[in-house]
Image 1 (tube, rainbow, N blue to C red):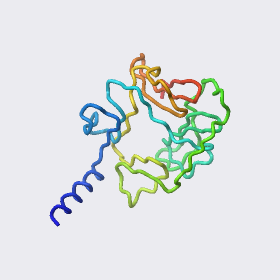
Image 2: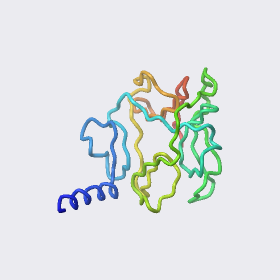
Image 3: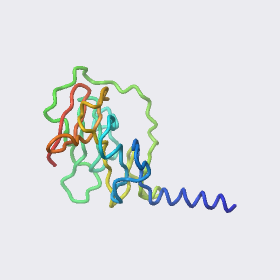
Image 4: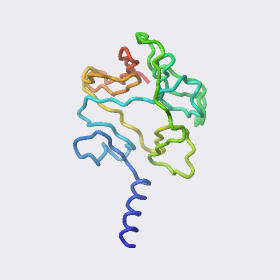
Length: 189
């Protein structure tokens, strides 16, 4: 019984105070600092990115909240949900992070994968009370996500449409998004 209690206590504390690192090869259980809820890859760079959720269109996203990131497979653009009201809980419009990129050569990339519409992974937050819609929800109110860092976007040999990375080998550093044909870059908030 004592063994079960110890294991259960460790699991619960890991969920409540969880910080997650994915694809990190050095000190894999230690995030960059305590303000990190999820971190992808090493601080010195890597050769992988994170693929955003594909949706049929931004309008098809069920109850999105401001800050939601998606890859809209209809127009093949990376978009983020915004609102003009402070502390809003609903998206008023979708910002285009692929602005200025060439259109992909393949129109309307199909997403043929079946979706489990009830699937959700919550990191931080309280599962019983967090009703935020999403596949991966970061529920921490005082921590952020660190994107995969790469020295150059060209280090990713075979990027997927909707992929996002943080490029550290440029001045200034910048976010890079792949739309299925080319990378677009975002340097200003």
